[in-house]
Image (cartoon, rainbow, N blue to C red; front, side, top):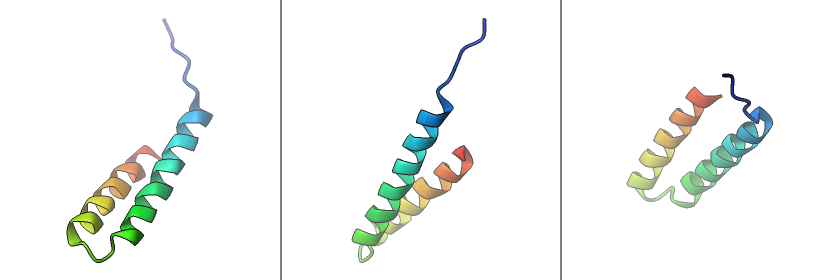
Length: 49
């Protein structure tokens, strides 16, 4: 049995996550833990794209 995936919707969600992680990194630029974790999120998103 094959499953159908909505790749366009998935791509849109990944892009939104990337924008949000970048915005969070920018907003929390003075907090090292925020920057570090935002960078981790962005790295994981890179694997998805």
